Length: 312
Image (cartoon, rainbow, N blue to C red; front, top):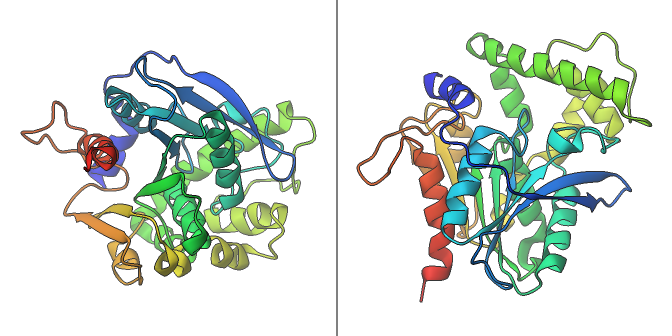
């Protein structure tokens, strides 16, 4: 739990925001914002990494900024996505985040590919963003776009129902209360400022995530209840179909995504599960002798992506 809390509080060195904001039109007429960071020496055809944040995050979250900064040092152009309802998408999206919104990620991939048709793309998802990445590439199977050649998912809740049951355990209720407080504030803000907001009118907002998904998230996305939403949007059933090189990074002390959820799920030979003894949920803090700072996760991600093009 300590590394999970530390990940929320510790920002690390934050570079100046120099990204170009771009608006992506989605499959259903909605929109979201991406943040395009291009290194000075980047040329057309060089690698691009698309980063997808977790449930309570956005493009400006510390881990998103740190990883983007390290990738740029390797000459990799980064695209940080603000999912519907978060970050700079909060006021232009009419709908809300979906834990399995692979069509949204597909729209972003298509948009980025049009920006640089010769570039190979790596997908990097954190927490629920990791589930979205894994669901997307699992649905592709052997029909994946050839310009997407790698993926990384960090602490992904691949079974949303299992994750929800785990959140209801007593030890995780503080984390759930934190999530619901932020979701409640975000919804209240958007109800005041977004014209045509997709809304069920639920009031008051439930204080449990399961009830929120059952009464709000599921119906606005066309699911009859939370159980159907979790079943349809979980990536676990699709991991055996993945056909591009993929790393799943998880920790054995993650309080949100239990390691047995991942360890007991069949995966294809293209998926490599990297499990650490400690790390919490999106923490992975460790000052190793090879790393200039404590953010072990950031260094590994940037090195993994950079190594793809270094292979002869």
